[in-house]
Length: 443
Image (cartoon, rainbow, N blue to C red; front, side):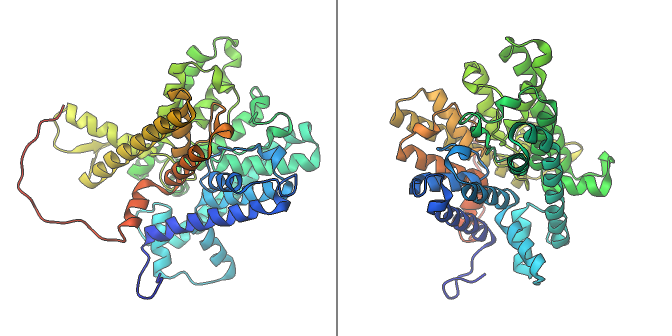
């Protein structure tokens, strides 16, 4: 794609600029008088923060979605969530499908980067499968949520709430309309509702495991050995990342509840930790050690090519296998009978460093600006850069400077740090010269 004469945009720049354009468009739509319940009451920064949170499927909000935004404003937010969750490029391709336009080689290359596909071949067919499957899953989720929503809000509002929460959960966005009951209450009113809990958990999980995993399951069914290594890594790591905090919540954080009433809240919070952003318990009641555990899990996020953000499950898997290979004094990193390339290991280390520095430095700065406890601010920044949306209740009270930091973190977390670095480099590669080797002691 050419811009300004002979300058050609790289695929990484197209993806980054696509998200920026969508955020700005969403901000302008939310700034319209018709978007807020009190016409013209929304200020520009609230609109920018909300649009960024929706496009980056984070869920952090400075105004309660149900009580502050009108039906039109809520529809704008839902549309931004849908496009942001599926990816700007995927949404553009779906429009091309409907209009019957031909997909060129450049567009196919961008599509490959957008959904983290291993190759360009078959990318159009894969994208079509993703779009159709996503809409079918969201429709099924809305139907399952419908009885509970109708029982509480009547048919008309219940239908809208079912669709809204199904899309928000599948896209791992965490936006909710439960402010109709109590502002910023999320799904706390359904903490023991089996149907709502199971439906939302499944929507979050399916949306967060990644499109390539869907394709493997579609093509190979339950034949585990035929799955790609990436799908195996995603499924195994995701299972561990769900079980560990679930057990922690059951045995250490929810002891005030009878054992049979701990299961749904513990499992729900464990699943939603990795970028979904809903909650069914008061997070301020979680202990300091529990909140620290949640911070680590929020940084991990979902899986590559999914509706979720964060460092990604595969990054954590590679880092753990790298550490294990060092402990074993092995020359190469191995995982499930396969050797991992050095370039993948380097990317994983770079991503870890970026996320840790971003969340820690930003949290420290916000703590200094707002004069708030460091752990509370680190929780907020981990939630933002991991595109999670969980909060200890400080988002709405933050100053302009702190909100701008969170906006930047949400954008970086959704688009991806490496994508932005590659976009800034305009496709240029570093020096390939081989320099003299010298050893340095570490550890």
